[in-house]
Amino acid sequence: MPDDQTDTRPHLVSLCGTYLKPEMQSIYRQLVGVRRFRNTVYAQWLENESQFPYPSLVKLTKLHHRPKGNFVKRFWYKYIIRQWPPPVEINKFVGPCHPWDMVDHLKSDQPDIVHAYYGHKAVTYLGMLEEWGGPWVVSFHGVDVARKVDDAEHLQGLQQVFEKAELVMARSDSLLVRLKELGCPSHKLRLNRTPIPLDHLVASRRAPPQNGQWRIVQACRLIAKKGILTAIEAMKRVVQAHPGTQYLLCGTGPQEEKIRSAIVTAGLEDNVKLLGWLDQAQLVGEYQRAHLFLHPSELTKESDQEGIPNSMLEAMATGLPVVATRHGGIPEAVTDGKDGLLVPEHSPNQLADAILALLNNPEKLGTLSEAAAETVRTNFGAETQIARMEDVYFEAMALYRARNAKQE
Image: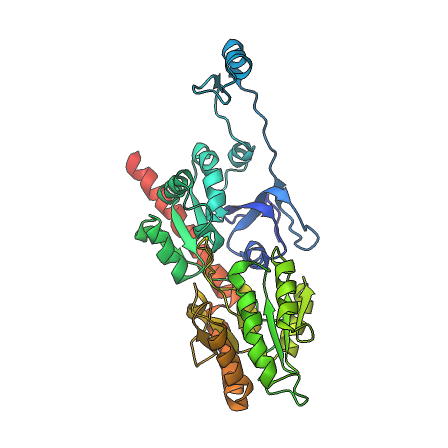
């Protein structure tokens, strides 16, 4: 890799809130996968650097501003009439006031394009990006089309992001539809699917286990939208027909205790196992040993929805057929009856029916297995998707230049 002095490629800055949470494997693939750009990552917080090594990483510094205010008014409202916060503005800041030193870094580095990861983070970065003044794009990944969108102030911020960004990317067609509903102009929207590296994911046709010990795996954060409680309910029927079945949950999250309690209540302690967080090699090992991948995602009361789950695509690439729900971006990756089976959300009985349909039909299991591996290789290969993301960067740069040329 050429150093900064000899590298003539355009300079990309990738903005991340936290670099990087363990579940952000797909973002790491994008960061390290760009080829036509020299990439620098800016992050507010650094985590898991040994897991996600990166040579050009800038930690932003939090700025602490001391406001200049009227001491008499502050004393009056806070200590005399005890009306705090005060009903009128009594403080003022001199000059631009941003929470992080991002503007200084951007003005020093002068990148050709900036990519802000996650829409809600772009709301935070908006003022800083505007003061810098260069071209930037934003990508949406799922949670950011639900998070705080019922808050009028945040929604207004999102709509300003739509207005100011050159282009807006999303992981799935369903997310693009949602962004339109939130007010993003159609002409700015671009599809950028999850990049899946395939070299280490060897595909094999699945067949029934000789000993009856079926292995059904799900890899995800243990949160409500993953449908795990629905899956546990469905497993009661599956285990009645196939007592040796194991449902293996790979991941951690805030619902862990609730899930453990549901397992006990269902009497499935011998059949449902929580394996905790696994690294990539361990996870691929579980995929290779499994017979079926489960992902019964469901819309939560907060309207949190999936894009296209990365773990599902990786599992499919190893030849695991999928049983999942018609939720979010899942139907964009899984074709019912071709490479998996899809059922309605919040429906444990139909979920159980779909699982049993494959456990009871070895030929169908094998056919879907082969098609699952082919689907991912055709539609989600990492090189193809990262190249398309780079195309969006070049397009955004051209739009910025054209607009500035008209203003001159």
